[in-house]
Image (cartoon, rainbow, N blue to C red; front, side, top):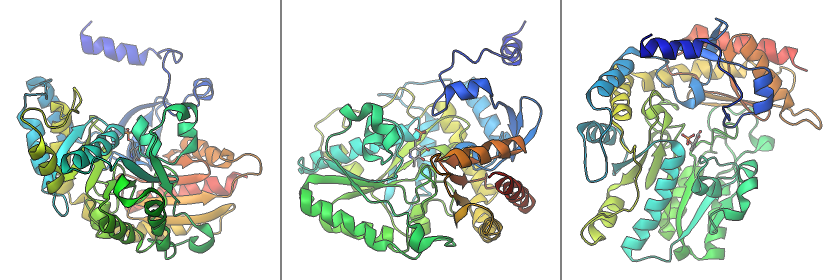
Length: 448
Ligand SMILES: Cc1ncc(COP(=O)(O)O)c(C=O)c1O
C-alpha cells in the first residue's frame, strides 16, 4: 500500500473518537452524536454521510476565499515539495520575506513591519510582548499595564485570556493570569441599539472608561489597550458610531499604544482590507490570523508601526533585538498559502465583492425580524448576528438547538450562547444568502 493510500484508509476506516481531546467542544456529547465533515469545496462542506452543507461561517471566520481554492492548493503543494521547512532564527527564506513585503503593501498608515506567528492567540501574545519591549526600549519601562474589554476574545494564551473578557475562559486558570490588567465595559446595548443596521448609534461615550482607568492607575503605567474593532466570538458586537475614534484619541493623549485584534475582521470581512480601513482608525499594532492564509495552513501575524519596530531594533545593543519567536514563524508552506491567498483576494476583488454584497446581506438578515424569540439582528460587512431570547433557566440551549437543526438541514452556522453568528466566505452568491436565511427562518420557527 502507498503512504497516501494508507492515510486514506485510516480516515475511511471510521477512526475511534475516544483518543482525541477536542478543543472548545462538549466532548462527551459530541462523541455520542458526532458531526463530521469529510471534504470541502467553494461554499460547501460535504459531511461524512455525503450531505452538502452550506458554510455560513467560513469555517471559523477564516476561509474568506472559499474552500480548497486551486491556486492556494497548488502553492502549498509546490512549497511542500521545494522547501518543507527552514529555520527562521538567524536564517531566512524568500517565502516569509515575500509575504511580509506583500502584506505590508496592504496596511493602512505607517503599519509596515510584520512579525509572524502560527495562530491568533500567538499573535496576541506577541503583540503584548512587543508593546512591553517597545516601552523598555523607549525609556518608559514603568509602562507595564494592559487594558482589555469585557466580552473581548483574544485567543487562549495566558496573555490573551488575561486581557480578554470571557469569564469561563479564565475560570480554571484564574490563579495565574497576568496581574496588571484592567477591563473597559463592552459596547453591547440592546436597550438602545437593538435591530440597528450597520454601526449602532449609541455608546461612543463607553470609550471614556479608559480615562477612568488612566486616572486610577496613572497614564504612565499603561502600555497598551487591546480591542477587537468588532467583537466576533462573543456574538458580533459592533462598535457604536464614534467609539473607536474616541478610543484612539484617548490613547494618543496619554501615550498608550492601541492594539486592534483583527483576527476575524482582517482580510475583507467588512468589505475593506481591515476594520482599521472601514472605520478610518489606525492602530499602533494589529493582530491577524485566519484569512491571512485562507486557513489552508495555520498562520498569524502582528503588524507593527514603523516607529515601534525602529525603536526596539535600534535601541538594542548588537545582537538579537527581540527575544521572541516560534519555530514555525513564517513557515514556508504557510507563507506560500498566504501569498496565493492575497493574490486571490486581489484578482477576484473579494473585498470589494463583500462590500457590494453587504446591503443584500443586511436586508436578508433583517427579514428574520419578527420570528419567534428573535430579540436583535445586527450586521456589518459580511457579518451577521441574530440574538435569541434565552430559555428560562437554560441559557444557550435555544441557540444550540438552532445550530444542530441548521446542520441537519444543510447549513453550518455558529452560535455563542443564544447568539447566532454568521460570516460566510466572501464568494457567497445571492442565492446562497437566500438559502442560508431560508434555512434559518424554518429552523428558528420550529425551535421553541
Ligand atoms: C479576535 C480574535 N483574536 C484571537 C483569536 C485566536 O485565534 P486562534 O484561535 O488562531 O489562536 C480569535 C479566534 O477566533 C479571535 O477571534
